[in-house]
Amino acid sequence: MPRFLVFAGTTEGRETLELLSRCGCETVACVATEYGGEVLPELPGLAVHTGRMGRGEMEKMMACGRFDGVLDATHPYAVEATENIRAACDGAAVPYLRILRTDAGLPRCVQVTNTAEAARYLASTVGKVLLTTGCKDLNLYTSIPDYRERLCPRVLPAAESLERCLQLGYRPQNIVCMQGPFSEEMNLAILRSLGATCLVTKNSGEAGGFWEKCEAARKAGAELVVIGRPSESGGVTMDELPRLLRERWDLEVPAKKKESPSEAYFPMFVRLAGRDVAVVGAGEIAARRINTLLEFGCRIHVIAPEASLSVQNLSESGKIDLTVREYHAGDCAGCALAVAATDCREVNHRVYEECTAAGIPVSVADCRAECSFYFPGVVRSGPAVIGVTASGTDHHLASAITRKIKAFLSSIVEK
Image (cartoon, rainbow, N blue to C red; front, side):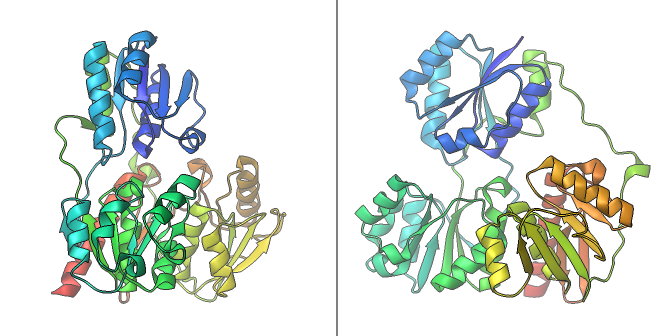
């Protein structure tokens, strides 16, 4: 049985592990933090190593692990980690493959090449700035004369992250300690609560919540500063990985099921203004669905035993009706449509059964077969509404097309 070592602290890392599992491989996943290990899927033949390693430790693991290959799916900005992994593979004589994150282009923004250049640019501006680039390079921003008053770093809610911010002199009232992923609505709320007129981010792609930050900045009227990705030579994207696994390691990669024309979904537009919609669940997926529905004037009833901060904020502002309890049969009665987006398969299935029996259109987040409609990517420009879907088979494709349409419409409006 083929055996692989995967540096997996990213979305691409998790997708790589799932692909290797489908191929029947044994895998060891390396993640830097305990949180990184917690979000990995439970897969047959998967072992997890937690903790940061230097080049020597990596090389020792590779030499002792009898791996057929090492797949580097670390963050595109983790240059030092990639250099160490590549060097360790050379030392241990183990085949190396870099997994690249797809770059879908940039919206209208100020582009800089690195953090130092971002700091120099910010020094020439005024107003508060939301920094969403992590805590590693926060020291470089302290060269800005008034950084204590102006800069608001958003970092992980970990003691070491907060301690670093305080040691560098950032004011406690300007530090945002939160765990992502962040929805567009949450990014927008943070920008407005801080009074920030600028947002600084890395071009981390869809997996890094890049577009949610871009859209939030646009809606807030905040300037967007994007730190470009380090250049990379060699490697493959997730779309190209199956071919490389077949060619280099002679693996049998299960082919994706192709959608037949008869299984594609017909794009029907319905009026939701003034009608009731039930959303069962109040996590990040539910929040994204709710924010989309809010654009269409419906009355949204959310049922969940606990709610994410973004959903709580929507409830407190009176935009939705939130009931904090477990789902009960009949919660969807009389609704125009329903969404099941909990982390419990049993609850989602019960919502599906209730809605199907009552003839209520339902979207079930964790089961494509139980969806009578799919949530599309939505683009609005005045009275024009454009919905994009890949019939539930390729979320990344639908998202990429939605972004391109948004960029196209924005360019028309600017002209």
